[in-house]
Structure formats: C-alpha cells, structure tokens
Amino acid sequence: DQQVKQNSPSLSVQEGRISILNCDYTNSMFDYFLWYKKYPAEGPTFLISISSIKDKNEDGRFTVFLNKSAKHLSLHIVPSQPGDSAVYFCAASSFRGGATNKLIFGTGTLLAVQP
Amino acid sequence: NAGVTQTPKFRILKIGQSMTLQCAQDMNHNYMYWYRQDPGMGLKLIYYSVGAGITDKGEVPNGYNVSRSTTEDFPLRLELAAPSQTSVYFCASSYRSLGRSTNEKLFFGSGTQLSVL
Image (cartoon, rainbow over the protein chains, first blue to last red):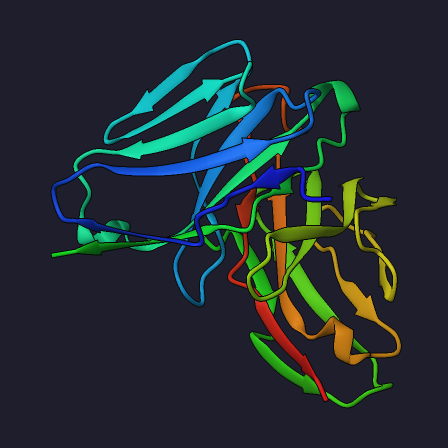
C-alpha cells in the first residue's frame, strides 16, 4: 500500500530547461510535504517543503506546487543544472497523526540533467 | 560540523550473525530515526526515538532493536541477520517533531550498506 507515489522512475532534461518531478499521495490526512535530494553513496538532503495551507513554495530555482484536491505535488527546477542530477524523493507526513510525525517516502525519481 | 555520523559504511554478514549499526548526532536533536532503503523503493521507517529512553516502532521493525540511552546516540541492533535485511540503512535526526514548523526537517547520515549472505 504505497501512500506516496512517484510514478516516473527517471527523467532526463537538457541543461537550462525546466525539470518537473511529480508525486501523488493517497492519504488525505497528510498535511506536510517535503522533497529530498540524494546523491550516490550519500544520505538524502532536504531540498524544500510545503504545508497543506499553501499551494506554492519557492526557494531559488526550486518551486513546489501542491494541489490538494488532486492529491498531487510537483517540484519544478528552473533552470536545470548538471549538478541537479540526483535521485529526488517526495515525502509526506501528518501532523494530525501525533508528534511522532513519521515521514512516508516515495520511491524516488532519478533526474539526469544533460550538459 | 559532523551532523549525523553512521558507522560502519559497509558490512557483510552471514545469516544468523548479529551486529550493531552505530549512529551519533552532535546537533542536540531530540528526535532520531532509522530508515532502510531497498533497491527501487522508498525509505521505510524502522524505529524512532523522541528523546533519551523513549523509542517506538516504525513501519518495518521486525528483526531489529534499538536503544536510546543518550541524546546523541541511537544504535540499531540486528540479532539474527537474514537475507531480507540486505539494504542500505540511514539514520536521521530532527530537533523537533515534523509538522511543528515548516522549517523542521530531517538530517540524514551517509548510510550503512549491509549485505547478509
């Protein structure tokens, strides 16, 4: 029962163009969403987050959009750079589930930015 | 800044052996977590701790044990290693529980790659 789904295992984009990574969730209790980036042989690092009270959050080249009615969020990277090549994980949590705040991760999307 | 430190980075175990994966953080974080990542899968929560002396099960706790005697350390114990425990293990920490603030996030270690043969 995959509550957080990233249906695209991989994505290839030209340098300078936009990268769009998608994530769908099934649990309507989720109210906090995060994106993590992972390079090989390293741990995931936090990229950007969004609360369910917002529909957009922006941080430099990275923007996350949340569509609660569709239970869908997306990460936009503009412009894409070769250093962005990594695996991107979407994660969700429910604050209403209690203070433990277990993060549920998607399966990840491997982004390759071609020079 | 060390952050979250995991040892060892790699380990090969025989079926039935036991071992402890070490995790230490120097950020004075209250919350600590253990995740495993199988190939092509997302990270699954094994155990977590909300403070010294307090631990609880995550999604996939079977075959593992944890303890939290200090704020800094959160070791993960495998008692009878099985091939199904072949995975990459990540330890993580956070100062407060997620969701208290949209600025809160997990800090991860670099992982331990474990093979059980």
